[in-house]
Structures are given as structure tokens and as C-alpha cells.
Image 1 (cartoon, rainbow, N blue to C red):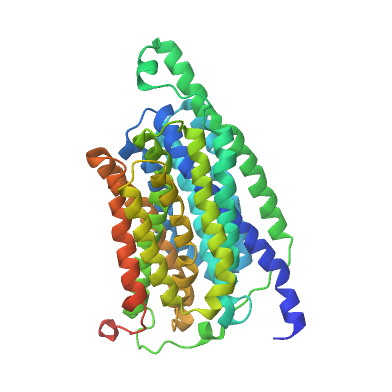
Image 2 (cartoon, rainbow, N blue to C red):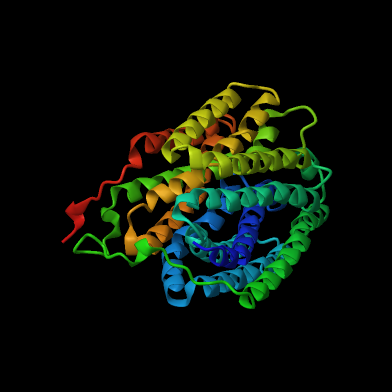
Length: 424
């Protein structure tokens, strides 16, 4: 690759890096919305978990259609379209906040996530193809670091703008008159308007910026290679892809569960001095730990086999969550906060391993992997269910089970072995 070729990739990488920052920022706000809407809309732990469900189920619904859209209109136009859909989703928070109707918040989150799904399907393989395939994991780790930067900044801004400085207890709310209570809860709901309207403006600006920029359509030589199977459309014959899909499902489910229940976790422990706003700093610390790990991954991943990185990260996550479950002080929160460090290299390690050898089916495989992000919708519901049954702290055994499968993937599941029995 000559210098001119490398130079031509600079602006596209900057744009894609910005997109990943937005992914992290928007996603991290779910951890703020869950406790906020739980109070503003008077929800249970399980029902409040429909915040990540609405957000991440969009990945499941729109990932495959997004893959076909990218094939038809290309990476650049797909990114522009995704940003416009995100813009519309952010705008929908305005009527949701004005009416305090929970389902409207969920619809707004779903539309916002549909746009992000399209962006993810375009951006993940795009950044992998912008340069030498041997350094793809490093580039993914780089943009992932900025994803984590967004995840660090989001809770700080969201916690300041959305979460109340004075939390009213259940008894205090019960003692209010009906009109005062409705006025208080309505005021709480409208707190989301400012951050999401600003977000809408930023998304529209970025869409225009991408539209008028120069972003080359790139294609890996492996995407041009014919499939080795007679039935080239049966992509699920790739066992390592199936295992990768499950690993992504478990990874995202665990990552989202640990983060989005963190503030609720602190409330459950009844720690002295803990508030929703102070909890947002721990949520930000979770993103900071992930960001630090991803910057380290830029230098470490090229020197370490991806499956070894997966094994070590999964083991450390299991240890930290186990420590948290058996702690009764702030140690419990610090332990789960550092799980963010364990998550740092999982995506950039799992994703490239899962699409190895897919050839012309790479884009379809990418769509299925993005689709697996629905784990972020399903696993939090499971945690929410057990949170109501056995308490939030013990409910964190669910992420441990997720990391156990990820450990297995790093040991054996990643190995390439086509399931030709499905082929004609």
C-alpha cells in the first residue's frame, strides 16, 4: 500500500471514529435512562429493563435488512441514512418527555437504535477494510477506544442534565398530593429533552458532513472470492461464525447488564452517601476502564493471539463480578466498574475471528454479528427478573454465565470449521 493510499484513508477513519464515539455516548445514556424513567414513570426493575430491550432489540430486527441496504447503496450512503434515522429517533424524545408515556420513550429508543444498527453494519466492516487486514483488530480497537470515550462522557453529561439532585423516597412520594406528585414526575420526565435535542442537532450536522465528504468504497479481496460451498447463501454452515454470534450475544448482554444496572446496584446496597448522580460517576468509570483497555489493545492485540485475549478478559470479568457479589461495601461497585476493562478487547477480538474465511459473505456475516447485539436486549431482562426475585446483587450471577461461554469461545469455539452438512 503506497503513501497516497494511506493518506486517502485518513478522513474516512476520522469520520468512522466519530461515529463510534456517538455509539458509545448514546448507548451509555441507557444506564442513566433506566433509573430515571423507573422513577419518572413509576416502573419496576423488570419493566425498567425494557429500556435496553427497546434499544438493542432494534439490532436484531434491522441488522439483516441493514446489510442488504449497505450492499445496495454502499458504505457512505448507508452511514448518511443511518445518521438521519438516528436524528429522527432523538427528536421523538420530545413528545415522549411531554406526555410521560413510557411506550413513547421505548419507541424513540427503538428508532434511534435502528439508525445506529445501520451505522454499525456499515462502520464495523468498513474500518476493518481501511488498510492492511493484519492490523484490522488494531483499527477496530482504536475506534472502540473512542466508543468507550463516548461511554465515559455520556454518563457524566447525562447524569448532570437528566438525573435529579434531590431524590425523593417512596414514602415522600406517597405523602404528596396527587397533583404535586404528577407535577414532580412530569418535571422529571422533561429532563431528557435538552440532551436529546442537542444530540439530534449533532446527528444532523454529522449527516451533512459525511454526505459532502469524500469516503471511498473499499472492498477486501476476500469479499470477491467465491464461496467454497455449492450453496453460497447458507452462511450458517460456518460453525465458527455461529459460535461468534453467540459470543457477541453473551458479551453485549453482559456488558449492558453490568452497566445499566450499576446505579440500581448501588441503590440496592444502600451504601452511605450513594445517590443516582454519584452513581453516574461509577457508570462513567466503567466507560473509562473500557476506554483505557481499548487504547492498550491498540498496542497489545497485534502482539497477542485474539483467542488468548478473549480467555484472559473473560476470566478476569468472572473474578471481578464474583468479588462484587460477595462484597457489601463500595468494593462491590468498584469491582463491577473495572469489568469495563475486561470488555475492552472482546469486540475487536471476537468480531475478526468470527468473519475469518467468509469471503464474499463477509457483509452478511457482519450483519448477523451485529444482529447478535440483541443480547443487550435479552440478558438485562433476565437480570431484571432475578433482581426482583433475589436482589440486584445476586442477579449479577447472570453476567458470570455469559463470560463463561465467552471463555469457551476463546478456548475452542473460535476455530474455523465449516458445517458443510447444511450445504446442497
